[in-house]
Amino acid sequence: QVQLVESGGGLVQPGGSLRLSCAASGFTFSMYAMEWYRQAPGKERELVAEISSASGWTYYADSVKGRFTISRDNAKNTMYLQMNSLKPEDTAVYYCKTPALGYWGQGTQVTVSS
Image (tube, rainbow, N blue to C red; front, side, top):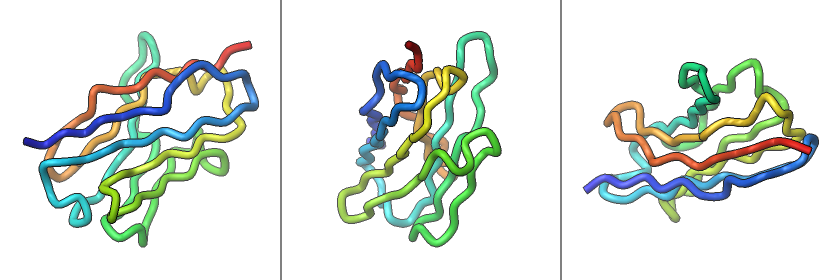
């Protein structure tokens, strides 16, 4: 069955960096665009970044543009989110999703605090 497993979250100080990973299985990963979402406490889940199947196209929310980089390795069935210059407002649970198939991962917590 389809599985998406996020990892790499944690506690980081403002200005720090983290790299999230999303390991996919159960479908032909290389055929599908992938997305990162986040949900902060008391807020709606929001789209952070998206990448096309062959990495030829990416999208970023204005709030993360210039700080976050989405990438993927189709040989490893894995998507990444490199997060730099982290701010307290980036604190959230981060999820990966296959938009075409509608599957979500379980999420990984990112906390930015001094």
